[in-house]
Structure formats: C-alpha cells, structure tokens
Amino acid sequence: MTLYCPSCGAVNKEFAEFCAGCGEPLAKVRDRKVESEKAKQEKTSDGTEKKLYRSRTNKMVTGLSAGLAKYLDLDVDLVRILWLIAFVVSGGIVLVVYLIMAMTVPLEPEVEIT
Image (cartoon, rainbow, N blue to C red; front, side, top):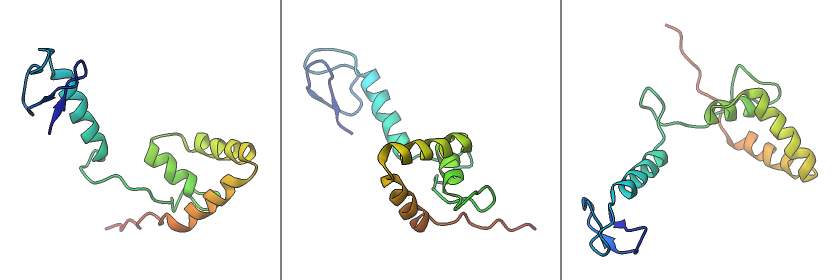
C-alpha cells in the first residue's frame, strides 16, 4: 500500500509516520485508505458478504424495493417512494431500469427451518 502525501504529493512507504518530502503526519491518510478498503469489502455483522436479493416475503410487485431497502439499510417505504419519484421525474425511463433489475437480481435464498 503506497501512501501519497495530501500536502506535497510525495510517495511514502506503507508504514511511514511522516511524509518524506514535507514532514506532515500521514496517520490520517492511512486511516482514510484503510476505511475505504474496508468499505469495498462490506460485510454484514455475521461476517458474510453483503449481497443484493429481491425479497420473498415483503413484496408488492417483485420484492426489489424491499431487497434494496435491506441492502442499503433504509426503510422499504422510502425506497418505494424514491422509485415513484424517479419514475415521474425521468419520464418513465426508470421503469425500464426497474424491470431489468427485477429480471436480473435473484430472489433471496429460502431459509430452511429445522
């Protein structure tokens, strides 16, 4: 992992405390880089990778809004309202996006009750 100084742009070693070019502390730069890498590998609380699914239980049409709401950690009614607003504002183009997503996003796996 190469660190670039935000002040002077100098290239620094991975574990450098201060910039080799200007002497500025690099701790904040390293913290931001680590956080962005963590965000790329977003995981749920049980350690599994977060995936987008259509909901089997909470659906009005296809379950896409409920699945998006769960994935984005939002209220399902808010997501449905945002779809409606986007549909009106875009002149119906969002309907095509919704239909494509509804066809390509898989249904959530069935939970086996034991």
